[in-house]
Image 1 (cartoon, rainbow, N blue to C red):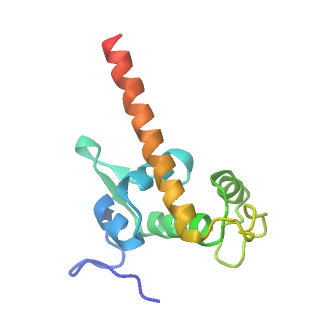
Image 2 (cartoon, rainbow, N blue to C red):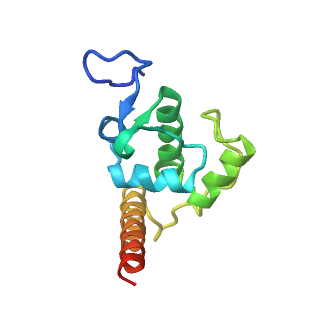
Length: 135
């Protein structure tokens, strides 16, 4: 499957966070959250903290997204896979999070929960930094 890309950009061109967010259908704050959780995700940062993602960064983020949202892994599970080098597309061997049972979460609900958690973590960090400045 050919990855979608903005008109006029080659496949090897760097992408901004907004382009990656749109391509992966993942909010920007979730990408920033994953950057903090997965040390392997290291976009280039330029002036003002602007992030630029290489094609290999995007491929890794796609795999993280698929493991979390489609295959039911937890963040810790994906971290373990990445540490052990087993997060390739050829069928990861680590245990996924509990498979949805009759009352389990489907992929969409799990995605929504992960997004809420990411947003809450970001808010917590903002409050901590505001507290340090005020204190």
